Structures are given as structure tokens and as C-alpha cells.
Length: 115
Length: 114
Image (cartoon, rainbow over all chains, first blue to last red; front, side, top):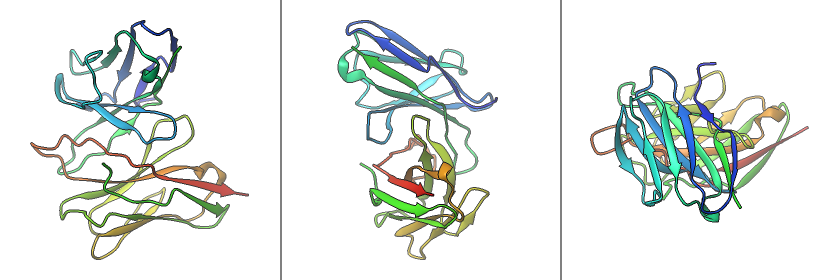
């Protein structure tokens, strides 16, 4: 399967713990996005990488959140000192520009539950 | 904020065409219309996109009005597996001031019934 993969698929943690999620994009895609989705809502943009450079961060990305894409391939999203409000589905998408447009392909997501 | 308006829910009989409307009255001339869908507990799935002309692929057809202020996604023969939330998204082309992020609204929950 050459699609976007995410690991783990599910994570249960206690409030105050740190968690890290991984995203492996489609191999030739240089653009990578993170989104967060809470129950009943559409996904919300968190951050964007072009190759290894983080070019945009949403105001949703508080100081407790950090994302990296060290070699322009896989990416990690870390949440420090988790809070119950962090419970959500974390989605990763990748794309490659094709002229003026692009198509983002999403992974299956990591569902986080903070107790 | 999302720049589109969609009905919150729709029903469709299995085997019939599902027509999902979307209003985007403030769309700019260079903005594309994208459709994604999300089946329960999965990541969003790309369906189709267009700028001005109608588009068709193996999944669906996209009809954009001449003034581009609205569009309709057509699933020609809906099946039970098409039950999902369908998102209509307007986005500008990638450029120096735009990173290409998608801004999702609430979408339309399509229920295909036997």
C-alpha cells in the first residue's frame, strides 16, 4: 500500500502525559499537513510542511504542540502535558503540487483519548 | 471560516443518483471547488475538483454553475458504501501566500438507504 500511513491508530493516555504520533506520507509528496478533528466537526488545519520546513502553524497549535519533519519524509506530532480537550482524531495528509492545484491524500488518522 | 454552505443531511435510495448541493457565493475567480468525503472513523477521501468546467471521474461528476456560485456533486448510482459525510471546499491555488490548507465546514451527511 503506497498511501499515507499513521501510527498509532489509537492512543489512550492520562492527562499530563506526553504523546507522539507519526505520519508517513506518500513517498514522492513534498507537502505534508496535520489536521485535528473533534467529534461532529470537520477537520481543522494545524500545520503545514514543505519538505522539512514548517511554513504555517494554526493558532490551534498551542505551545504544548510541536511538529517536525526532519528529513522531509515522515513527520511527528508531539503533544506535551496532554489535556482532556486534546482528545480528537489527528489526521495527516500529503500532496504534491501539480501546476496551480494539488490533491491532498489523507491517512487513516490517530484517535487520541485523554483520560 | 468555511466559504461554503451545505445542507446538514440528505437521504438517497440505493441505486439512485445522489445530488449533493453546495453554495459558494463568495468564490473568487481563481479558486477551485473540491469535494472530499469521510466514511465513519476513516480519513477524508478525495473525490473530485473543478474550476469552471464540469468534471467527471470514476467516482462522481461535478457540475459548477456558470456564475460559479454553486455546485452539485453527483454520485450516479449510490450504494450503501457511499454513506458518508461529504465536504465541499473552496480553495485558492497554491502560491506564495497560500499554503494549500483545506478549510472544512460541517459537510453533508449522506445516508444511502436500501
